[in-house]
Image (cartoon, rainbow, N blue to C red):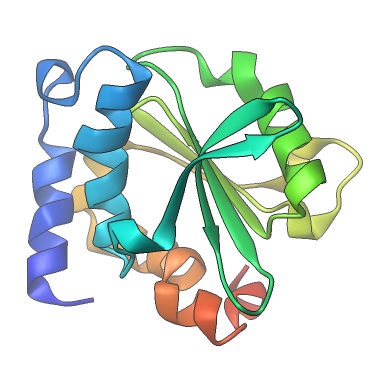
Length: 159
């Protein structure tokens, strides 16, 4: 990861609730998109409002290899526990290798790839946004979220 991307993550870590905004779209545009761009994704790689079982996945990232990452945004401060069943349904339909849910304050990374009986057992990391200033945390996330690993199909080795 280059220095510019690390600085962007530092900036995101320091955002206030007002900077992020109070609804899902603001969380998506003010936090999630810059977050993903720091790990090598561009807006053209992101499928916004992807159809899933009559609902919409906020962001779906796919590759030629067939691996997908889905990201579900919630309003700032919303309890993420209330939306885990929704993320599980989306993962079941899309067979995603990685799922992220965030309210702009907390980020959770799940890997349905693990195929545990209870979806909550597939939790890899749960971090606060402020931890994005921690180099060790960034490196862990980079190992599972890097565009490079998703494209070369080595993401499953890192998960």
